[in-house]
Length: 70
Image (tube, rainbow, N blue to C red; front, side, top):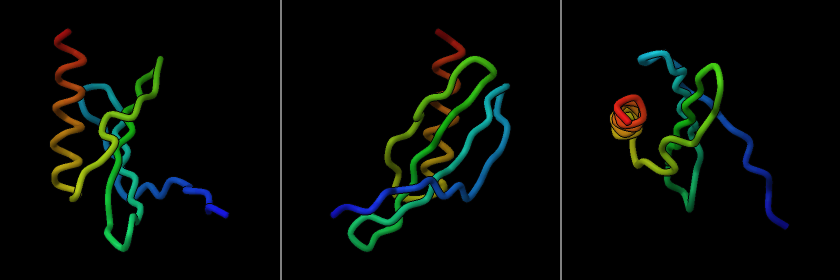
């Protein structure tokens, strides 16, 4: 039976009005990251997968920037 995957938020910060939350999990023995982006009206998975915290943060900021420029 599969085990539930509860979020493990390891870092949270504000960026351009969005609360960015980095979720750390383990897949096949490798640490991976996903990023949630939350504002006052919505919540979205901005980054479904990143191999490092640095990449996860970069991709999350790019996601927010694209969202705000649309």
